[in-house]
Structures are given as structure tokens and as C-alpha cells.
Amino acid sequence: MNAYLATDDWQGKAGRLWHPRAGGRLYPVDQRIVHRRRGLPLAETAALLSGRCARFRGNFMNRTTIILDHIDGVEAAASWSMVSLTILLIDGGDAPRPGTIFRAICDRPLKGQGGMMLRLPDGDTGFLRAAKGLAPGQPILVQVTGYADEGKAVPVTHKVLFKSRYAIVTPGAPGVNVSRSIRDDDARDTLLAVAHSVFDGDHGLILRSSCDGADAEEIAEDIEAMLAIADHVMAQAEGPNAEMLNEGDGPHVQHGANGPTSRMS
Image 1: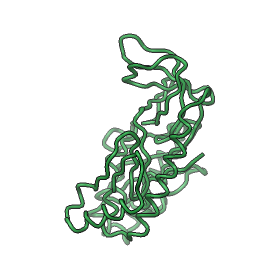
Image 2: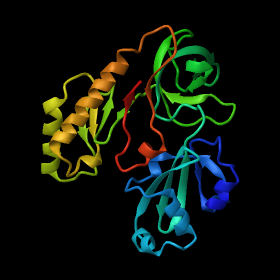
Image 3: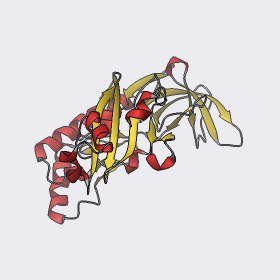
Image 4: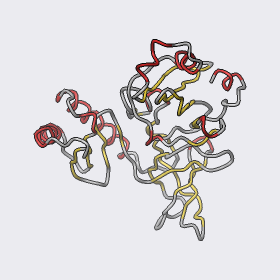
């Protein structure tokens, strides 16, 4: 890994993953395959790769570990699984992070594709699929789904989600649900009771698997915080100009032990 970092080839390739079985090539990161455990310095990962860090190797045999550090002042997160480096995610540049929410302005439809090009802040351009019913000049809330390839528009979706450690608020999709990975009926009933005690609105709510065994008061506070952010952002859906309303998370928060959060801008 040190040899790769020394090439400076990683610079400017935000949101890419490094996979040793792919010949060192960089691909857009698929955040769904990353499991969150605990953080270790990136320097320890380099030592593990060279076999010089025996005190950690035994602990890594049967788990996935997330390593958090900085490279030349830039956030970096690596995934270590079964004594091999599987993912190296590096933040950088001015590209909008995945999860960022914008008020975008519809620019021009793409005939034959059913999509719409959007105006984003700072002269950026977004691409929205399934844009039926939208008209040029119309404002719309969108969320960044990934990093754009060089020269391409930023991929976005109109299905905006607000994710935190314990909850996902889903505007436009009402209902309160508990992660299916929580199977104990008593635990599910307890979590639903916690949610209903603080949740009241038009949004939907999903309680994440991290709620299992978590403190009820912490879960309730987390839900209230996400609802406040969701209400704040959704209230700004209308406006004449493109604007960033909520910034996405960097590698440390995306792949750290605390899970993703939302932050008002």
C-alpha cells in the first residue's frame, strides 16, 4: 500500500476503491459492501501488509476492520478483511460527496433517455434518471448517489434519505419500520415504542440494526435530531437558485464506527 500511495496516483480520485485482485485499479466505491467495526491507524495497515505487525494479525483473521487516518491531510478509510486490504477510500477535491442534498434546478431533458440535466451550485451539473413530469427551470431536491467520472455529471436521485447512527428518515414514504436483522419480537416492540414516543410527522422512519441493544434514550435523541434536519431541509425545497442544503459525509464517518450522520449546512 505504501508503494501505491508513493505514486500519487490516488490523488484526485475521490470516492474510489482499491482492490488488490483488480491489479491495483480504482473503481467507484460501493458503500453497501462495507461493514463497520472499529478504527485503526492507516500506518498499522501498512505494517500488516508487510507482515511486521504480529500483534494485530490474529485479531483480523475472521472479521472486517475499518482503518481511519489521513494521507497528506486528506481523509482516508481502508477496509481490512481476512488479512487482506479490500478497500481504500480517499476523500479529496471539490466533488460533492455521496449523500449531499441539493436544491437543484432542472436544466434540460435528455430525449430518449428519460433523464434530466440539473444545475447544481458552483457551476456543477447533475444527472437525474426517471425525470418524468419535470420541466426546465423547476427546482427539485436531489441527493448525490456517487462520485461522477471525469467529465460526467454528478449522479443524483430524487429519493432523499436522512441517515444517522440509529435511524433513517424517509420523506414521502410514511410508516415506522424496524430493521429485519432485529428478529427478537420483544426488542422490536420496544424499539417501535421508543420511535412512536418521539416520532410524529409525515415522514417515514426506519430503525437500523445498530438499535439492537442500544440505549433507548440515545435512540430517541437520534430520531429527534434526524427529524429536525429532515424538516429543515424539506422546507427549503422551493427556491430560484441551486443550493447545497445538507453535506454528505467523508470517508471517516461513512466507514467509521459511528456510522453515517447528516449535517445541516
